[in-house]
Image (cartoon, rainbow, N blue to C red; front, side, top):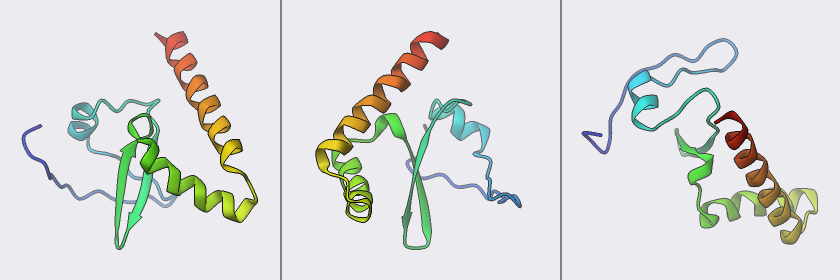
Length: 95
């Protein structure tokens, strides 16, 4: 990457979809099976690859969901681990 911050203007479709510019997808190794986490920061949206999220970034997400759904921290950790295992298994099969 040449720069820390790069920008492009993209259009939101009628279904709320956007296309990430190809050079960004290539530089960030995003393909059709990549999952992104989106965060709203004021009037900005920030996207990050799910498999690059740290536990510190994941924890507040799940705490918010847990409070509203009555889910325990232990239950959440089990689900996260199961999802990661499934994602890794999918990648091994598709390799």
